[in-house]
Amino acid sequence: MSTDNGRARIRKAAAGLFGERGFHDVTVREIAEIAEVSPALVIKLFGSKAELYTVANTVTVPLADLDLPRESLGRAMVQQILNRREDDVIDPWQTLVPRIRQSPTPKITQQELREKYLNGVARIIGDTTEDRRHASAVACQLLGLAEGLRVLGYFPSEEFDPDEVVEQYAYTVQIHIDRVATAG
Image 1 (spheres, one colour):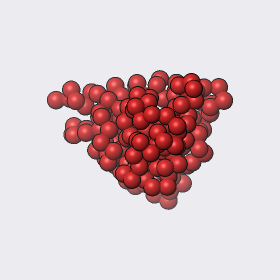
Image 2 (spheres, rainbow, N blue to C red; image 1 turned 90 degrees about the horizontal axis):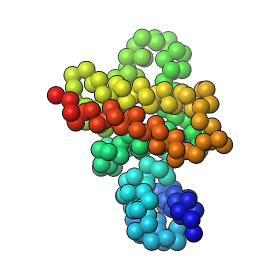
Image 3 (tube, one colour; image 1 turned 60 degrees about the horizontal axis):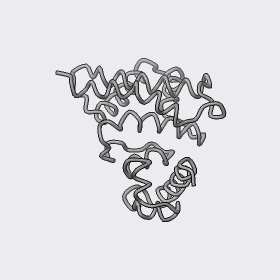
């Protein structure tokens, strides 16, 4: 069995179990059993159950509740956007611009949505700076990625391996998350 085949089987098994029972009621051992691999291979390929959840799940993952290691947050955030595109699920990041433009009170809607998303990102990455500059940078990158994938069709799945896109884009998101730790 190739690593790619094992990875795909693990994702499929995890997606099914997580979809049926949620994150907390599924074990790595159960995922491995359905995928017909060892639990050690699941951890080797995905790092942890929480990281596998971000890869296998198409809905918005409550990242703050998953206790992901700091160094995995950028990857998880980017992975969510790619998952939603691959499964043709509406991406909340991609709906922001139309919601503001179509609002009867665009300035108020802009302010409300900016604060909601900025507060959410700041909470996840631990940005407590007064101006939340790091959360702002992460939010801009995620918004740009979601819009670029859906509106402009960048990184079409038939031409680009989603894992490669995650690797490339997660790196730049992670830079801003890592800067939170060094902010004074």
